[in-house]
Image (cartoon, rainbow, N blue to C red):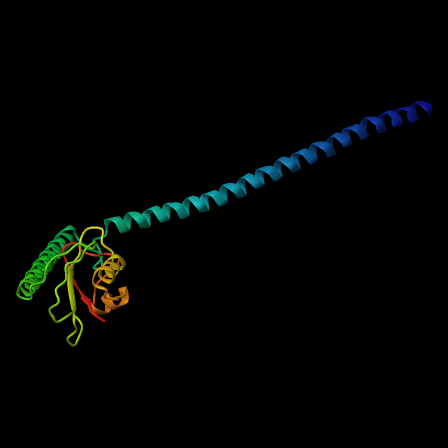
Length: 191
C-alpha cells in the first residue's frame, strides 16, 4: 500500500504541474486572442476611414471635372471687366482734367494767383466758393508738403485773417485733409 500511496502521491504532483501549465498556456492563448481581436477591430476601423477618404477624393475629382458654375467668372469675363475698369478710370481722369481746366479758367478770370504756404498770395476778389452762397475769401494752390493747419496759420500770420481748418473744410466740400493734391486750388474763407 505504501507503493500505491507513493504512486498516487507522485501522480498527484505530476498532474498538478501539468494542469498549472495548461492554465498558464490557456491564459497566454486568451491574451493572444484578445490582441488578435484588437488588431482585427483596428483594421476594420482603418478600412472604414480609408473608404471615407476614397469617397472624399472621388467627390473632389467629380467637382474638378464638372463645368464651372454660373457664379464663377471665366478668364474672358475678367478681361472684359478689366477693360471696363480701364475705360472708367480714363473717363474719370478726363473729367478731372476738364474740371481742373475750368477751375484754371475761373482762376484766370478772377485773377487768382498761386502761392506757397509760407507767404500766401491772396486774391481779395469775391469769388464764389464751393459752398452755397457767396462768401468773401481767397484761393490758395496746394503746394508739396502742405497741411491745412499750415495754410490756416500762414493766412492768419500774413493777412491777419483768423481762419480755422474746419472753416476751410466747410468751404471746400469733398476736400480730404489727409490727402491734399498738389496743384489743386482751395478756397480760404474770410470769416
